Amino acid sequence: MSESETDIADLDAALAAAGRGIVATTEMKNKLGGLLTEIVGLHASKPWGTSEAGENFEKVYQTDKGGAQFVIDNAPTVVNTADDAMGFAAYAVTHISALDEDIAQTVWKLDPAIGSQIAAGNHERDELDKLGR
Image 1: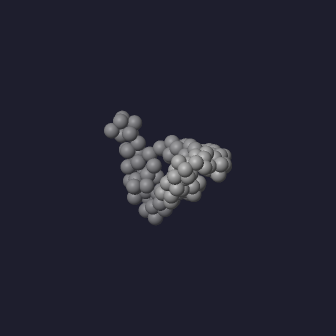
Image 2 (image 1 turned 60 degrees about the horizontal axis):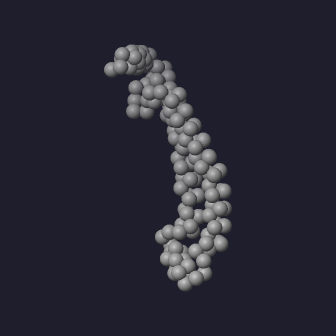
Image 3 (image 1 turned 60 degrees about the vertical axis):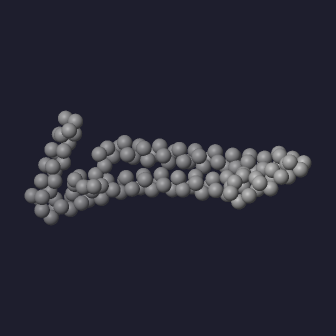
């Protein structure tokens, strides 16, 4: 692989982390449906009551800036955005690694001397990594 800003030091670990992120966001999406159903039910039952105090509470609670409706309206967007981000991370890790390999192979074909230098540089870097430097 060519030495560049796109090098991924531990591709397996990066892919595993992205995979764990995808699993976590999938679990969030699955749990969110049940939670939102419960919230909608509780919200509709108006547990604060119909007394004057309950009605005053509802006026404040039903504002645009809070309450259950805010969660109902916005939680799916947050979870879907996280899910999209994890999918993109896995895609990026996979394709950056493939791009680096393609670049290295192309350079090797165009100029084996430079390809040898890149390979030697990667070998030297790998040896230094083993020594902890």
